[in-house]
Image 1 (cartoon, rainbow, N blue to C red):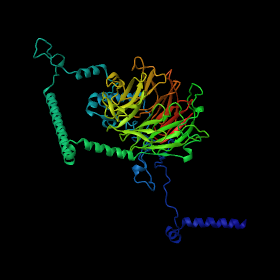
Image 2: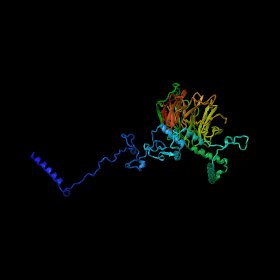
Image 3: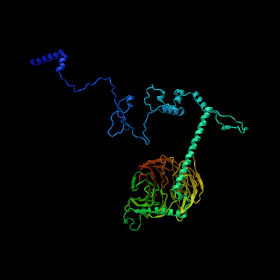
Amino acid sequence: DDDLNASSNANTNNNNTNVNADPAATSVSSRSVMLAPNVDISTSMKMEKYHDISTKEIMHNPKAEVLFGPVQGPLRKFSKSREEEFKPKQTTLSGYVELEDVDGFAFSEQYHTFQSFGYAVDPSIRDHHNHNHQHKEKYVGDSELLRSNQAMTIFNQSNKMRKDKKKSNVRKRLRNNDPSDIDGYLGPWAPTLRSKEEEEKYQQELDQQKEEWKLMQSLKKKRKVTHKQSADDANKEEDEEEDEESLKQKREEARKQSMALEATEFHGADDELYDYQGRTYMYCSPEHRKRASSKNYIPKKRVWQYIGHKQGVNAIKFMPRTGHLLLSASNDTTCKIWSVYDDDDQKRKCLRTYRGHSAGVRNICFNRDGSKFLTTSYDGWIKLFDTETGKVHWRGTSGTLAFNAKFYPENENEFLCGQKNKIAVQWDIRQNRIVQRYDEHLSAVNDILFIDNNRRFVTTSDDKKIFFWDYGTPVVIKHISEPHLHSVPFLTLHPKKKWFLGQSMDNKIVTYSASNKIGRLNAKKQFSGHLCAGYACQVDVSFDGNLIMSGDAMGNVYFWDWGTAKFYHKIQCHKKVTMGCIWHPVQNSLIATCSWDATICLWH
């Protein structure tokens, strides 16, 4: 205890001596190092809490200056500039769309005000709580009219101002309603009264339009002359009339080039081509020829997916009557035939590939028994293939692009084909020439359908018209053309053969009568809900006639009820547009779909 008291007294004495000592002496004797800098710990500075722009939820309440301030902070390693670093992500095909919570009344007020007066509140200014801004900063549009109207909106203007505005818009006309004055009678065609200044402005506008029109006409003439001169210089020999022999030689060369592309390949071993009785894949066992029941249901699951085409598939067709084979046409210039049933004798796979075109195959069509099929391609050639052997029995072209070819059901040696040059032509395979032309459309002929016991047929075109013809007679017996109609690129016949359906480009399926009063629109049988604008998506009806099916631009397949036109269900079948969807002719509730994602699917 005595030692502790002594040490404490010593410490107090030392402290007292330090306080009373000379400051100069203390600075010399003491040496100290400041390891930490001086920090201002006062709370007078602004302590603002910044947030990350990628966050969607903020747990505090920032001010508007902080929330909408410029982006600050260092850039990342691989970022090129500050604008690209903090640029918002693309939310639509055209760019970035930001959702804004705007009152409906305020939006409609500003919208109609801008449409009527030419000014409105600037929507890009977010700091609307500060009312010290001028009109030029807060409004966009006609500033002079804004001042004259005192920032009046469409909803707060008085009745007097509305009447004055109507009166100012009404122009006075010259009056001479005396019909006895033959030379000076004006009537309802009287011109409006204009002042001298207005008349001068009007004449200046007319003169300017005349000069622009003359300049455009002179440019068009120069282009035509230069084009003709270049064509004459390059093709002097071609401008002369060609002999029939030279034309025949060119046609023969084109035919030889097309024949050089023709080939076929059987995918399997040689012993798989024939069974123990010498039958090929064209034979269908009797158990697959009979229908189990007469009612179809909407498919629920995917049974199989065929993969073999390298590009998008444009069309698919089941083998007529039996449906044990599936034929497909693709943009990879080939057609393939696939087995449908998964039996012990035959598995689901590609059986044969048909080649013969230099461009994508647009459409295919079987004959009545399925032994042959027609192909129309973007290279302009139409070819007749043998389904069993892959041999090309016939080939022909009219020099223009053929869209769709259909066998005449009463005579398989003739078929109709719609072309790009506004004509539907009738080919005779035996004579190897066009025997009839149906020329009434104003644009490309898209599809052809036989109706009324195959005595008549229907053609549709890009000119938004539907024509009805008697087979063999190039005279339109009825045409459908209304201002509200859209192009119908695909047609199909109902199993009862009283109606035919068309895929309209206004995202609807329309129905017309196919017998008795042909061409009569059935307004109660319109099927909508899908998106098909711009695509010739296939439409099909189940063999019992109760379910309607259509492809979709988003890769879906839609189902409707025929009796009530009610939408039932949709299935997401493909990643890209579903171009083809068909019901199986025998098997219940079995459909096939194809898409531009190069796949074909079976659904049951």
